[in-house]
Length: 322
Image (cartoon, rainbow, N blue to C red; front, top):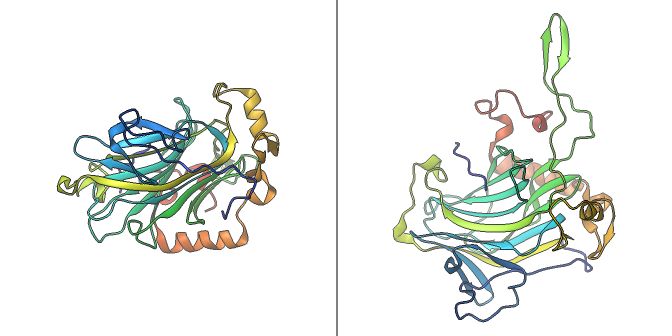
């Protein structure tokens, strides 16, 4: 998962909708739940607490905790109804993200950066493409994310990756590999030479869905100046639901299975029904969503790697024209 040490709509009726949570003490006296076939602990089983219909990930001075989906998918939408750690959460990071496997993995991150009581949470998004990240953006939220549940989602298809908060797009990463990209130019011997290359876009690697909570007080709050106050522990992030609606990767297939790639990439129908995420209208934002994105960035964006010339003296190719 990415750590940076610096500064929609409703699903169609035919869609596969999966509600996910997991018992805290699997195999330790807690009966099986209806969620056990969807997610499983990824580490620290005893820091996952099943409270009625809710899943809580817990952080204390000993450990954090996390879960991972039991199956993978290629294209679609993953979302979580999440209530963040209340009160003084400085130093605490809660993450909800999608990731493939291997050194050349793709990854789409929501990282929620805790803060001192009364100060706003910051939400950091990031993308790894073929193992390379450093594409951080941060926003502050227009509501208190600790007071109630809100929905955080990633829509992923061959055309775009969209990060959404309560169906409002906050970030879009477009596939521009087949478009003409006008990049940086330099002048040499009175000639202008293009140094542009097509922006990278995540290739068809199957993703699993993850969440975790951990201590990151070396960087997460005010650049690491504010440390975790363990007198407020345990810190708990609460999930009401996790949903995955996508092209389910066959359980017995390898991550590079060409047949699975074709099935999920080249068709609009499959064993899950119609692939709504591949419809033409899903290849770009609607006019209304575009207006929402402009609003979110104008009022709530606090950091964008695309304009950080200290880190990137040469602007990354996907930032050109912005």
